[in-house]
Each structure stands twice: as structure tokens, then as C-alpha cells.
Image 1: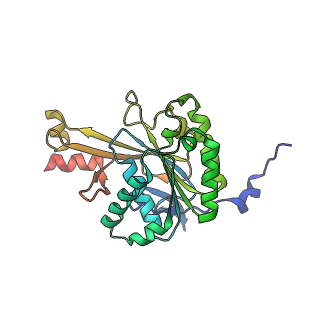
Image 2 (image 1 turned 90 degrees about the vertical axis):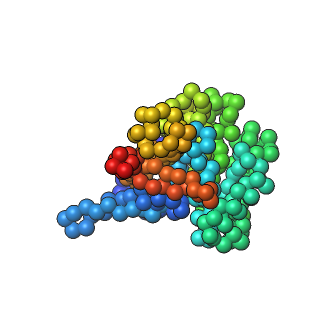
Image 3 (image 1 turned 60 degrees about the vertical axis):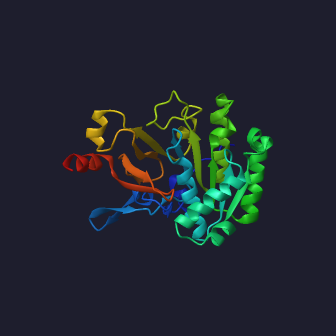
Length: 283
């Protein structure tokens, strides 16, 4: 028999709304509205919403994996266990990338090593092609290692030659992460025909429609005098942007922000694109 609830009956099951830090300014871009007296106050969550499943999408070389790795290192350095499912990069290469970023972030790498658990699907055809086998492996790792966060980089690699199944595969993963109470980050890749500024990725809007929220990373190559005048950058330079496309769990800043990937290989979100352009125009 189908089960239903009166809304008040769900109070005991409701999740607490707080942030899970990413180590970037995204932590201030998700917020909640609290009532204080007769007024309403906007308060940053301090991270992505707890138990949310967030999609990170963008064209190649926009910083998707950098953001996912920075989130993993931040959580691990705070003592929380992170399950990192690597689908594109073999685990030994992931180790090197995370070690370099941890050093750049000036965190204790021994703590990061201890708290990041890796499943290498990049070198396992069975895990990439068989979603049940992957989820069974993830379930075992989460229970044994007591993981509270899960990253899949990238979820696109699980349906790269069968995009018609994207919605089914993403739905299984989404439901799994909810069942195991994971704060999740899914990296998704775009096809060359898809607009770089949208939430659409390989498999269409399968990921964006199912997950709790999407963060879109983009880049603009400066290639004309118009671009030079507008953005204040030289020909051949790159302007990187980041935007929260939507989040069903909490309020968020929907503006487009400018960010950089620093010399240390870390994401640094600078300011809204609008104020960036105005500042460049005055300069």
C-alpha cells in the first residue's frame, strides 16, 4: 500500500540545514534566511548544503576536478572521511594531484591521506560498466570507513557511450547517496555542441534535473578588441567564471562570479562578474 504523510509528521525526519565547507568562496554563496524579531536576515551556510548532491559541470579545463579535489582535501583535513570515486584519472595520478593541492593549501597531508578513501573505476571496466557493482563497492567502503562525503569524477564516464541511460544511472547514484546520507559531488562533462554556460552536460539535463543543485564553471578566451575593452585582459588570456545554476535545498547567490586557478593550482573566487567589469572599465 502506498504510504503518505501529513507534513508535520516529517519533522522528526527533516534534515538540519548547515554547510559542508568546500574551501572556496562558494561557502558564502549558499545561504538561509532566518527571522530575527520582525526582520529577516541572510546567513551564509558556510558550505554546500549538508546531504545535498551537487553537480559540477563545465567544458574541459574549467576547474571541475580542481574544485572537487579542493572540497575533498578541505573535508579530510577537518577529520571527515571522503569517498573519492575516480572514473577518469587512475588512482596513482589522483594521489599526486591531491598531495600537491594539500601542500598548496598548507594542510596536514597525513590527515588527508588517512581520511580520503579511493575507488579506482578508471582502471576497472567492471566498475565503469556495471553500476550495481560500483554501488556495492561504494556501499562497502562507506560502511567500513565511515565516509560522510562522496565525490564521483566524473559521473559522465559511467555512461559515456550509452547516454540514453544517463538518467537511469544518475537516478540510481542519487538515490544511493541519499540512502547512505552522503554529501555528494558529481562532476559531469559537456559535449562540444552544448552551451558552455548552461547546466546541460553529456546525457542532456539528466544530471541537473535529478541532483539538488548545479555549479557551472566556464571560461572565456579573450580574442577580440571588444573582449579586451570589456574584460580588461589581453588577447589570448582566459577569463574564468563560476555560477550556482540552482539549488532546491536552500537559497543561493545566482550571480556569475569571476575566479582564478592560482599558480598553486587552487580555485580562488574573486568577485561578481558585473563588478569585475565595472572595476576594469574604471581602471
